[in-house]
Length: 309
Image (cartoon, rainbow, N blue to C red; front, top):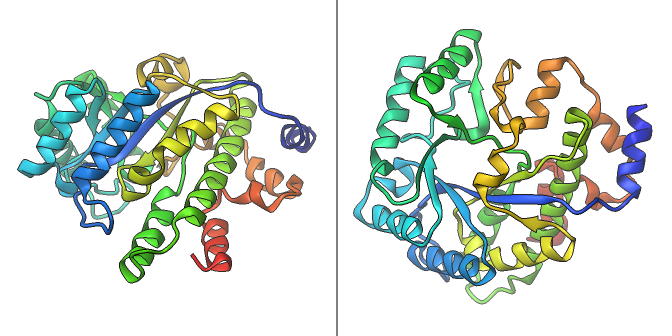
């Protein structure tokens, strides 16, 4: 039955769908060729203003949020009408044995302190690496911590590996400043469409209905250059960009899945909690177009190698 459903989803066009934009690791002040971090942020904000799209940024301290430059960048995003939320201070992985619950909670509070006074601040937390704990005590203890503080989880329904393309693009431009960036843009759009189709189909299978999506992208050079292409591409495909607040209203985003290790994209976590394996394997088995498998980090890396990117 699952394989038959996936066959239909691969063949049939997706119905019009809603998606909200989230950007992780802001402000990410790492030096970049062509466009320094402040210019990347200016370009992204202009893109979103011109296309009338609101984003939610998940900020942390170690990626520049605890610097005057980084704070000014986040302030500008809030003043432009976007949301600012917590992504911890140190970007620790809660699934690592050496990361204790007490230390992790303290780090989360430290991260919130950086952004609490900013315009657009919202009490929503996104786990670094989307990892919610490798033990029951850590997973449930942190769930209780969030609930006690009235913090919602910044769940992701469409995960992506845009950071892999960004790393390759940066390296190429450092070595060849005038290299053609179009192949990176084209592969980026193929990757995002593969992720959207894959996670939308998985969400429909898990929840039995259409949900508004939240896509995870990163505050990076890649999106400073190509965010406008991303927004336009999804619109051409018939998708509608909605505000993060609208997407997060869906009851699916209030879930606290009990899978272990905890975390990952929402459909992944809920299907693991329910003990319903097999979707990914069936999706791969039924795919006839190699582009459908570009949701995979491994497949994306292999394609970049093949294309010499």
